[in-house]
Amino acid sequence: MIGEISVHNRKVVVIGAGNVGASIAYALTIRNLAREIILIDKDENRAIGEALDIQHGIPYMGMSQVKSGDYSDCEDCDLIIITAG
Picture 1 (cartoon, one colour):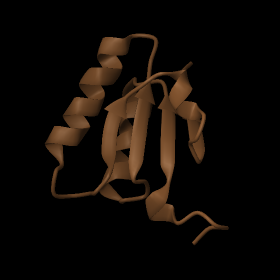
Picture 2 (cartoon, helix red, strand yellow):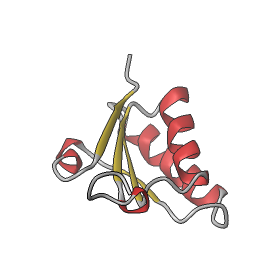
Picture 3 (cartoon, rainbow, N blue to C red):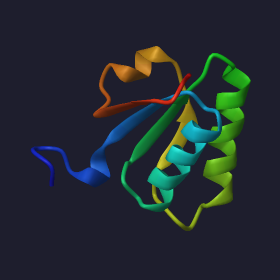
């Protein structure tokens, strides 16, 4: 438990779905550090593709839901990671 938020109940937004952002989302998933991971990128198709790759590639290695989104998903998230450069 960190404060009032369980690590496993976190919603994390990763801004930037390039190599670094996708790697962070992958690491969060396999370490089971968040229940929901949202990828945001200016290239929406890249964010969708990376989210699908992670979600479909490791179904038995984590319980996280990985998907693409937009900035409105930041409203109720617990952590925002900015990897856009």
